[in-house]
Image 1 (cartoon, chains in turn cyan, green):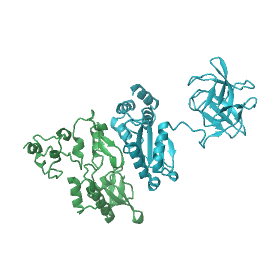
Image 2 (cartoon, each protein chain N blue to C red):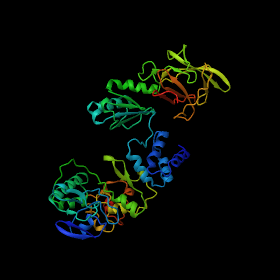
Image 3 (cartoon, chains in turn blue, green):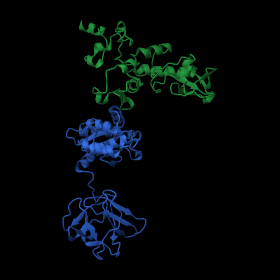
Image 4 (cartoon, each protein chain N blue to C red):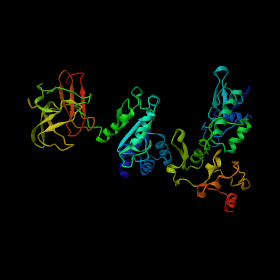
Length: 282
Length: 225
């Protein structure tokens, strides 16, 4: 932990009433927990006593004063989940991980916690692992959920995931289809665009599955670098979209067949995107 | 000036005073645990409940935090009030049976037994010590931590606080605390104002924690031999 980080976070919230919780949340997001030194620095930074800051930090269940594991596993024990066997699920997780609720495994992989309600009572018993909801969990699924978490839940399975659907896009200038049936990405026709990066022109093939971030590029674009996108047919610069909500980079607009526009971030590795099916280009 | 009816009598009190102050001024007894003159009212112990209003609309409010208002009808000792106080005392006894202050109050209200699961806490979370430390001592060394059944009073991380000047004010005001010290009345040390048959400091190994102000300490003498 560096005290500069903490003082920067404190400064960002300076002067806002009720900023303390925001500060603590940011520190927790950064370090995974609230280090004792950070609490002291926060108290000093906002001119409150350490007693107040500590009181707030211990009041809310979402703040942790102990380091947490890589994966956070929350088992709901709210009323609805409880009557559907949430306690058994929590027990099973405890057995599988060999920790009690509130504890972290020795290898710092998992933190197990019980929560009082996640607000999705109809789907109970609910387990949330790293922000991913698992509904109607039964004890036999516990091992499977832990296995998935170990493999990384953010890796989307493009073939089985229901949320992913293909989109067909065309150039906003010439309206020529950008789909390339000869080159498949994720087993679907790819979206083919020309990219200019570092003075070089080359083709980039994007997966047409909305929700998949797989691309195939003729040249390597380093992570976080910005590239310019062009239509391979009319050579129009694909620009004029909004700025990415995630990173602020310019976005690349494309027309979706059937109406609407999709915008993707032009920064390599950024997953920012917008899908607007309500109207056409302005 | 504000005129209100208290136990059937028209009384006049100064503007800005609370029902508790008004009642005490006119000699109606109201028991309190979390109230202390010079500290902000807190309404934590609920013992000072009084009935406000008429008939079906009468409600129980804490006298220590309720401001006196014109035309208010207040009953400080109605059967409903007494019943509520008895229940509160039972609950307090269930959590803090060792406190002499609570025992005395319970005896005064003829509470002879309590029907709840017996615990042996040494804190009723009345917040007197926290307010004392903050408002009178200007130290803010102790505060509330956690919430619900895990709520407790203490310093951050349970570490000795640099803000604490060991003034003992927190223990002096505490109505329940085991660490209560009778420093200016050493002769009471054994029977103690806490009425323990064995003083708590005899059972504790760490004398440093107790911050005992007695010299000589009778308990220490017993312990030595």
